[in-house]
Amino acid sequence: MIVDCAIYDQGERREEKLEPRQAYHASREPGAFVWIGLHEPTEEEFDSIQREFELHELAVEDAINAHQRPKLETYGDTVFLVLKTARYIDPKEIVQFGEILVFLGEDFIVTVRHGEATSLKGVREELERRPELLGHGPGAVLHAIVDRVVDDYAPAVSGLEEDIEEVESSVFSSERTNPAERIYRLKRETHEFHRAASPLLEPMDLLTGGRVGQIHPEVETYFQDVNDHLARVNDRLEAMGDSLTSILQANLAQVTVQQNDDVRRISAIVAIIAVPTMIAGIYGMNFEHMPELKSTLGYPLVLALMLVLCLALYRYFRRAGWL
Image (cartoon, rainbow, N blue to C red; front, side, top):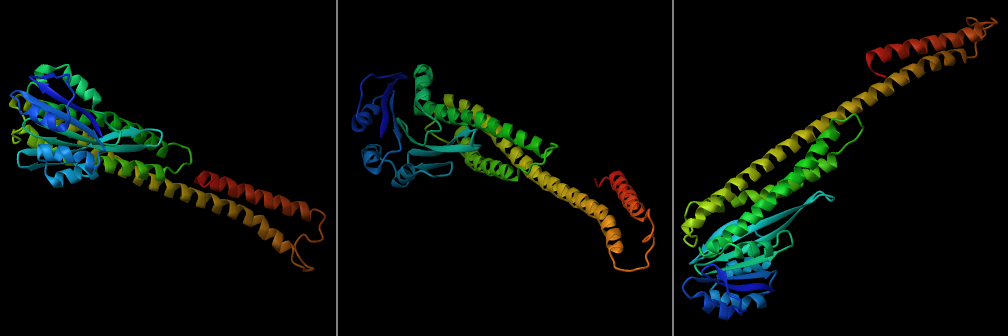
């Protein structure tokens, strides 16, 4: 569906509401451009926009079907940019991804949004309060969109970092826990996040380096700041991936140590129990001539011997750290 279709003339929004055909003709006026926003459109809903703005069929297919990796492609005089949005769902410890696909021309910008991770309503409202920036054309809108997407990466990365710190603390705590499943889940989300953010570095270099003719020179400097933020996000994600790998290895080592401790403890207990069992087994044999068999003190002496030997073994294993 078409969420909004607006004409901007010298940075000011016109109040009139237009259909795509009318918007196309209005955008041809000097100093004007059109911004059309769509949310999960069908082929029929996109058909008129494709015809009026002469959008390439391959890019339109990508915009309708979504599930694309971040990229920047040029089709004639139109630039096609794919962005991955991200929002961290802390209770579930998952990163929810969406997509924004942008068609950028000299006098138009068409945005197609999939998912609910990032809304463009706030971006539009902020831009409309800055007519001097909107006066630089649709490239200013593209910057605002990319800036919002990259800014929304920061809280998602911070949420992942907090949970990684929690799982790291649990690995090295004294409690007998095995958070291997949680570590693997966080590692998977971090990997998916990195796959969504890192491919955007190359398009940002193109947008920053003045190699996209549809971007006004005054706007190019703004993309540099976004590029710096994106690079920091990418570095943090790489560091988190390495950290989770180390945490997983440390957890496996901890589990191995705990298993060794359990084996030693069980072995010590078995050794202590084996002594009285052996003595009782010997005196349970049916022979007439055995030491202390006819003695009145024989029974308590054997019990005392069992107790002394068990205490001696317990003390030995205790000092050896097995108990």
